[in-house]
Length: 385
Image (cartoon, rainbow, N blue to C red; front, side, top):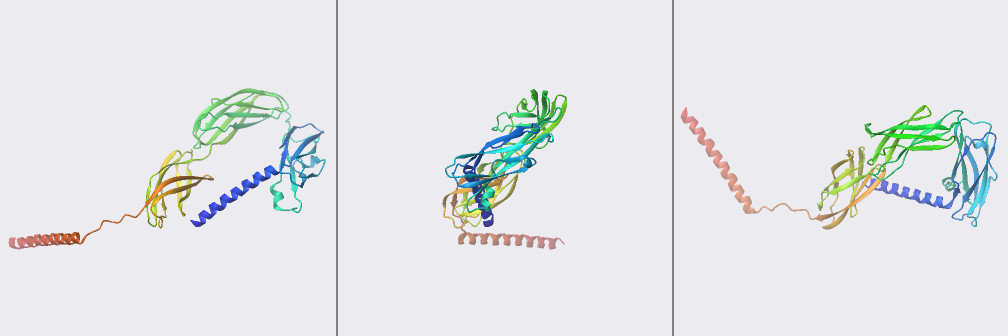
């Protein structure tokens, strides 16, 4: 139990440290714009302007480099950028030399801005705060061609879920008619509903999307969408696994409201799995400074279940306490608190000497009576024969 608590505490500290570090680094150094997407023009030079944002006014240098399939075509006017505490934002320019031809599709690269702090060259810190700028070049296909994707907007439970079919026209021509038929399935593979995404047109080198109707109303959980899409006589099937909300275990009721002072007390609870697949749940109970690990419980989808765990209560003074139940499931940690009462262990009923004496006399009378009956039966049997 102690090791479990130590592991959980360490995990939480690591998560907190990463979050704090990430927040600090985002504020310390940024880039604007965060990325670039351009359309391909053969044998041209494209100039792109960016800004380094020094929000915490650090003194440092920035080393520029590029990786990816276009890295040999990317050139920097300055390989190093000097930032001082007086600089809020510093501009820099990138030249992309496009060749005569590229493979159709979306060609990508990434530009790296590696900070170099005075006296900290090569340290681990510089690896953590390297901003990355994605660069994409859209190269058209020689005929009609579109990428197709399913896009789902996350909404609150009980609200119609907007589902879109997105067409990315990467062909050399305009698309006059594009649409789709969609099927929505639960995690068990059963069909929930069908939808229609009405026809739209998309200009070349453009993005278009059409919303599927009717928008379904779904509970939180996992789902799959299959779209039979088409554009100007070309059929394309795509599918997407979606998640609506997050897995949720709802503590319904603490059934054990009173605990006795003893080495181990049994605690019973009711909880509800508000998710559309089976969920494994564990965790621990805590009262005062005493913690006890719970076993792993399996909760069926959309089901309420009574579970029990055992908690050490020895050494606690009688009175009211807060009982903390920490649930661990689906990469989440959730905590519920209930009030319980600790009472002295009830003593068994006292047995007086008089009661023992009367009981002994009654037992002896019964034995004597049974013996007399057996003796009488034996004599009667002998007389008969």
